[in-house]
Length: 416
Ligand code: ASP
Image (cartoon, rainbow, N blue to C red):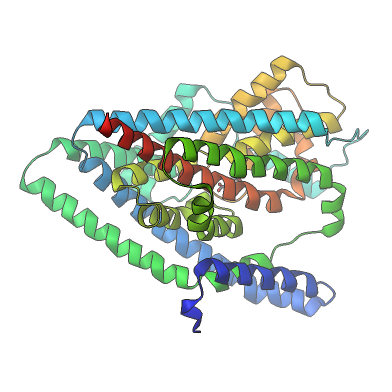
């Protein structure tokens, strides 16, 4: 059987397994470690860059086509309302699950002194400088771009891309006649063009995934000492993936439990290995449309907006992390503080970009809001790269599940 006939998800799993084996086997050999850093790591970078490269044009054209072809603004309102309600419901569930598990499992040990080395201290200062507590309208002002080209030129500004596409799409839906058809036709062509680009990039995924996993820098000893904390995060993420989402999509859509995982496994694996919702976005769109048959106007909207706003995995992780840090420092959190943690983790997650490490960067906001030292982040630095892989897979699963639910609701409304 030729390699092309092996399903993509199997190829990715094989690539991951070889990557993990490589990462461990190379350790005793400094020459091999250097080879991995100099030659293999860049291959992973190339793969992620290619995915990012296709994400903005695809989201941009897909969203405008989706909005532009809407028959009425009330259709957009219905899709928007359902999407945001489901996003909010799953985000709130994620934070409550995260905090409850952290409370029950209590993964924090009392640590008398926080040993902050120089490198970590520099990292913390940088993190503190990148984030400032903002008002809601202040944050909103940040996602409205004043320059379209600038917005489209930055992969971390997906929400700005969505804003521009929204504006152009709604304006297009109000137009009639030849000009509208021409614009729609051209953008549809761009969309299919970039879909082909994605197919080409995905053919490289086994190499890309191998390179990403093989060059992961994980220290087994440090990870073991934080085992209970990692277990709490991963357990919470598993509850979201295997219980909460299935409850949503089996009630609101016709998708079956096993069908969901079979059809989305390649996307989830891709999210896991890239640790980036934005890099996975083109594949997510593709699978939601082609495998789950969700119409363009719903899939384009839910998946593109969800890649940045709807990060249930990240919100859950932040709640566990803050609780763990508080406990490690011997701080007892009050009920009011827990409420603040839920609120700030939802808000700061919505503002985080779908890129590796974004969750940890925005964690500083929560720590500062509840009055914990930002230095606490040192405690959870080591396993963050690994946990990022798990939470990104859940973030992306949440977008797929929401697309199915919104589609299910739209179909029901049509029948009524
Ligand atoms: N890497 C995550 C994502 O792209 C965000 C995070 O760091 O939690 O979805």
